[in-house]
Length: 90
Image (tube, rainbow, N blue to C red; front, side, top):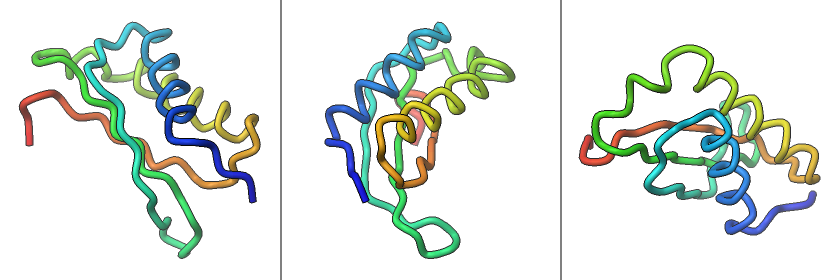
């Protein structure tokens, strides 16, 4: 199994978000396990305060599908679990 470096996953996620006009302040990753017990990667995309409404509908769907597709195209077999969070909301 090929595993992309954290910096590469962050770059992919940030580029996909920016291509869909999301206001991103940070992207972080962590190892994870999916519901079947298979290795996954948790990707958290932090948005600027007040911008969470901008991800409703197509922007979040497009960003998510682009990240999943590009990570797979790069040869990483882990399933991306993608979360969006507004900065300051915890």
